[in-house]
Length: 469
Image 1 (tube, rainbow, N blue to C red):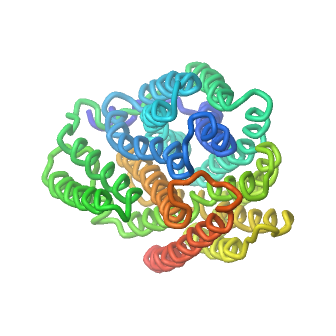
Image 2 (image 1 turned 30 degrees about the vertical axis):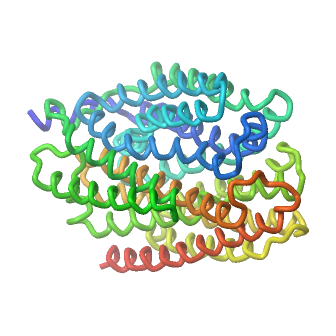
């Protein structure tokens, strides 16, 4: 009976259905990063309208990241029980509703709350996206499919600053939410007609509510506590988060039907080290676009549209090299490709440390392109290693864990950016007299990112030797 359940969705999935499914999944993968990267260009206008300082603006991204990270693993488990396709489509619906509501937020605090709610819909989509893709494609074609998916994500990151700048400039910041909502409706229609099959690897099993609560409390307080450092509140919340996650680990290891199979970490060193590499990579890089967006618009005085044209260079290169990495994975060990990508990222970050208030734009573009090469080489090979190291029954858990590592890393990165700004600029609005202080915060953040990325290289190198052995 269990074998029959696992075959649900796999039967009748021919190469044509797989390609159609890939189109749907890539469209969904485009949606969220597009909005996130375009939103960076609208932040100064949002801050002006609602009187939000730079530290508060970081919560536009952080609130969304926290909710997506908290709910991704529980919804991946729900998807295994009731069906990945069902949860995927419900997630798109909820994301669209919350995104439209963001456009009509009356104040900054409401907007941050709605961004948090949007993250729940995103968790439903990305807790299932990679799992469905991995189920659609056999191992020999999976690396290329993952490369295409990653290339689409980076294309979205490239399109976001360009179109986000244009939308903000000509139609106001509200359009940053309306346009992705319309895209979401299009993705929903495509999913209804093109995404065939259903995947229920744990049909009939119970959902672990207690474990989900412990996980949500632990991860939420851990991330929020980190972003609140060095305040006493932040230290207390960090402690609560660590204790809650420790209880979660103990409870899950003794539960008959856990919300997350922790033995993926305790018994699979390739999965563990690859996930750690992903966590560190995103912690060292996600805040770069945020800091540079503020730098280009505040310090250099560029319009949002012009700042977007500069930031687009990184994502365009990422997109190209993600496709290339997918093909190279057929001939070179993905673990080694991912490690090489992290080395290139360090080189780009070192260059950014030396930015000044008069650095030529062509140098900034070259450094962003270098970062794009590193990100492109790292992402899809690392994901391929993670998904290839687990059994089919654990695809949803591995997919959600990968997403959680990415999002937790992004939250940590935004926390680092926020702390650096808070330390040098305080809670003041960024004005010309504070430009030198902001530049100090920029360098502080990038130096911390470099240190993290170097640690990530060591983790990835250890993973290569384990994988090879």
